[in-house]
Image 1 (tube, helix red, strand yellow):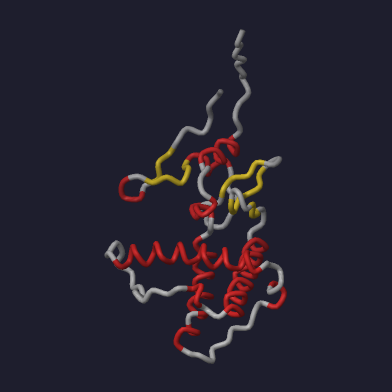
Image 2 (cartoon, rainbow, N blue to C red):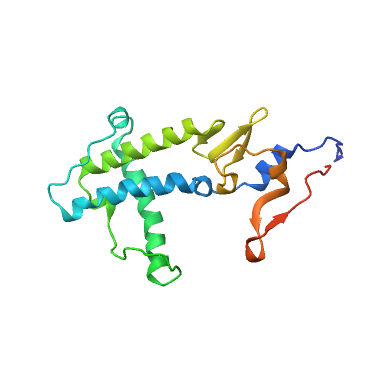
Length: 188
Protein backbone atom coordinates (compact mmCIF):
# COMPACT_ATOMS: atom_id res chain seq x y z
CA UNK A 1 0.00 0.00 0.00
CA UNK A 2 1.29 3.46 -0.95
CA UNK A 3 1.53 5.96 1.88
CA UNK A 4 2.22 9.63 1.47
CA UNK A 5 4.06 11.26 4.30
CA UNK A 6 3.39 14.94 4.83
CA UNK A 7 6.06 17.15 6.27
CA UNK A 8 5.76 20.40 8.10
CA UNK A 9 9.35 21.35 7.38
CA UNK A 10 9.71 24.81 5.91
CA UNK A 11 11.60 25.15 2.68
CA UNK A 12 14.39 27.64 3.30
CA UNK A 13 14.50 30.85 1.31
CA UNK A 14 17.79 29.87 -0.35
CA UNK A 15 16.40 26.48 -1.44
CA UNK A 16 13.36 28.29 -2.91
CA UNK A 17 15.66 30.66 -4.77
CA UNK A 18 17.79 27.79 -6.09
CA UNK A 19 14.68 25.95 -7.30
CA UNK A 20 13.27 29.08 -8.94
CA UNK A 21 16.46 29.69 -10.90
CA UNK A 22 16.91 26.24 -12.43
CA UNK A 23 17.80 26.36 -16.10
CA UNK A 24 20.65 26.08 -18.56
CA UNK A 25 24.25 26.69 -17.45
CA UNK A 26 24.40 29.30 -20.25
CA UNK A 27 21.78 31.33 -18.36
CA UNK A 28 24.20 31.73 -15.46
CA UNK A 29 27.06 33.35 -17.39
CA UNK A 30 27.54 36.86 -15.99
CA UNK A 31 27.10 39.46 -18.74
CA UNK A 32 30.24 41.26 -17.58
CA UNK A 33 32.23 38.07 -18.10
CA UNK A 34 30.61 37.34 -21.48
CA UNK A 35 31.50 40.87 -22.61
CA UNK A 36 35.11 40.36 -21.52
CA UNK A 37 35.27 37.06 -23.47
CA UNK A 38 33.92 38.90 -26.51
CA UNK A 39 36.61 41.58 -26.13
CA UNK A 40 39.21 38.81 -26.37
CA UNK A 41 37.57 37.45 -29.54
CA UNK A 42 37.33 40.94 -31.04
CA UNK A 43 41.08 41.19 -30.61
CA UNK A 44 41.59 37.72 -32.12
CA UNK A 45 39.65 38.46 -35.31
CA UNK A 46 42.46 40.77 -36.32
CA UNK A 47 44.04 37.55 -37.58
CA UNK A 48 41.45 37.46 -40.39
CA UNK A 49 42.63 40.88 -41.60
CA UNK A 50 46.28 41.03 -40.54
CA UNK A 51 48.23 37.90 -41.52
CA UNK A 52 51.06 38.63 -39.08
CA UNK A 53 48.76 39.10 -36.08
CA UNK A 54 49.88 37.29 -32.93
CA UNK A 55 48.12 37.03 -29.58
CA UNK A 56 50.27 35.72 -26.79
CA UNK A 57 48.54 33.25 -24.50
CA UNK A 58 47.77 33.83 -20.85
CA UNK A 59 50.85 31.83 -19.86
CA UNK A 60 49.52 30.22 -16.67
CA UNK A 61 46.50 28.81 -18.50
CA UNK A 62 47.76 27.82 -21.95
CA UNK A 63 48.40 24.13 -21.29
CA UNK A 64 45.43 23.36 -19.05
CA UNK A 65 43.10 22.11 -21.81
CA UNK A 66 43.23 19.34 -24.36
CA UNK A 67 42.87 20.15 -28.06
CA UNK A 68 39.33 18.73 -27.93
CA UNK A 69 38.42 21.05 -25.04
CA UNK A 70 39.73 24.05 -26.98
CA UNK A 71 37.69 23.03 -30.06
CA UNK A 72 34.55 22.63 -27.92
CA UNK A 73 35.01 26.02 -26.28
CA UNK A 74 35.52 27.76 -29.64
CA UNK A 75 32.49 25.89 -31.04
CA UNK A 76 30.38 26.98 -28.04
CA UNK A 77 31.37 30.59 -28.55
CA UNK A 78 30.61 30.23 -32.26
CA UNK A 79 27.06 29.06 -31.45
CA UNK A 80 26.41 32.11 -29.29
CA UNK A 81 27.98 34.40 -31.87
CA UNK A 82 25.88 32.91 -34.68
CA UNK A 83 22.68 33.45 -32.67
CA UNK A 84 23.61 37.06 -31.98
CA UNK A 85 24.61 37.56 -35.62
CA UNK A 86 21.25 36.25 -36.78
CA UNK A 87 19.36 38.37 -34.25
CA UNK A 88 21.21 41.48 -35.39
CA UNK A 89 20.98 40.65 -39.10
CA UNK A 90 17.19 40.38 -39.03
CA UNK A 91 16.85 43.64 -37.13
CA UNK A 92 15.89 42.58 -33.63
CA UNK A 93 18.28 45.08 -32.12
CA UNK A 94 19.11 48.72 -32.51
CA UNK A 95 22.65 48.22 -31.20
CA UNK A 96 25.54 48.70 -33.56
CA UNK A 97 26.86 45.34 -34.65
CA UNK A 98 29.48 44.32 -37.17
CA UNK A 99 27.43 42.18 -39.55
CA UNK A 100 30.49 40.42 -40.88
CA UNK A 101 30.19 36.77 -40.01
CA UNK A 102 33.29 34.93 -38.83
CA UNK A 103 34.11 31.24 -38.59
CA UNK A 104 36.24 31.11 -35.46
CA UNK A 105 37.33 27.54 -36.14
CA UNK A 106 39.24 29.01 -39.11
CA UNK A 107 41.50 30.99 -36.78
CA UNK A 108 45.04 29.62 -36.60
CA UNK A 109 45.24 26.83 -34.01
CA UNK A 110 47.77 28.61 -31.71
CA UNK A 111 45.48 31.64 -31.70
CA UNK A 112 42.44 29.54 -30.74
CA UNK A 113 44.44 28.11 -27.84
CA UNK A 114 45.53 31.64 -26.83
CA UNK A 115 41.93 32.88 -26.90
CA UNK A 116 40.77 30.05 -24.64
CA UNK A 117 43.69 30.65 -22.26
CA UNK A 118 42.56 34.27 -21.88
CA UNK A 119 38.95 33.17 -21.35
CA UNK A 120 40.15 30.87 -18.56
CA UNK A 121 42.14 33.70 -17.02
CA UNK A 122 39.08 35.98 -17.07
CA UNK A 123 36.90 33.20 -15.63
CA UNK A 124 39.22 32.67 -12.66
CA UNK A 125 39.69 36.40 -12.09
CA UNK A 126 35.90 36.82 -12.03
CA UNK A 127 35.47 34.01 -9.50
CA UNK A 128 38.20 35.45 -7.27
CA UNK A 129 36.57 38.89 -7.37
CA UNK A 130 33.14 37.57 -6.31
CA UNK A 131 33.26 35.93 -2.91
CA UNK A 132 30.97 32.91 -2.73
CA UNK A 133 30.64 32.47 -6.52
CA UNK A 134 31.69 29.10 -7.95
CA UNK A 135 31.43 27.21 -11.23
CA UNK A 136 29.96 23.72 -11.73
CA UNK A 137 29.96 22.57 -15.38
CA UNK A 138 26.54 20.91 -15.10
CA UNK A 139 24.91 23.93 -13.39
CA UNK A 140 27.03 26.90 -14.42
CA UNK A 141 27.94 29.85 -12.20
CA UNK A 142 26.41 29.46 -8.76
CA UNK A 143 26.39 31.07 -5.36
CA UNK A 144 27.14 28.54 -2.66
CA UNK A 145 24.79 29.27 0.23
CA UNK A 146 24.25 27.70 3.63
CA UNK A 147 25.33 24.12 3.45
CA UNK A 148 25.66 22.97 -0.12
CA UNK A 149 22.75 24.85 -1.70
CA UNK A 150 23.83 26.06 -5.13
CA UNK A 151 21.84 29.08 -6.29
CA UNK A 152 22.39 29.78 -10.02
CA UNK A 153 23.86 33.20 -10.74
CA UNK A 154 21.74 35.79 -12.51
CA UNK A 155 22.77 39.30 -13.55
CA UNK A 156 20.01 40.61 -11.29
CA UNK A 157 22.43 39.74 -8.43
CA UNK A 158 24.70 42.60 -9.54
CA UNK A 159 27.76 40.57 -8.57
CA UNK A 160 26.79 40.04 -4.92
CA UNK A 161 25.64 36.94 -3.13
CA UNK A 162 21.82 36.87 -2.81
CA UNK A 163 20.20 37.15 0.60
CA UNK A 164 16.71 36.70 2.02
CA UNK A 165 15.50 40.04 0.59
CA UNK A 166 16.38 38.85 -2.92
CA UNK A 167 13.89 36.01 -2.58
CA UNK A 168 10.98 38.43 -2.90
CA UNK A 169 11.91 39.08 -6.53
CA UNK A 170 13.09 36.01 -8.38
CA UNK A 171 14.57 37.99 -11.23
CA UNK A 172 11.44 37.94 -13.35
CA UNK A 173 10.16 41.17 -14.77
CA UNK A 174 6.76 42.17 -16.05
CA UNK A 175 5.46 45.19 -17.89
CA UNK A 176 7.80 48.16 -18.17
CA UNK A 177 10.63 46.29 -16.42
CA UNK A 178 8.96 46.19 -13.00
CA UNK A 179 9.93 43.18 -10.89
CA UNK A 180 7.38 40.47 -10.23
CA UNK A 181 7.28 39.73 -6.50
CA UNK A 182 6.47 36.39 -4.96
CA UNK A 183 5.72 35.42 -1.40
CA UNK A 184 8.85 34.33 0.38
CA UNK A 185 7.45 31.97 3.00
CA UNK A 186 5.49 28.86 2.29
CA UNK A 187 5.14 25.41 3.80
CA UNK A 188 5.24 22.11 2.02
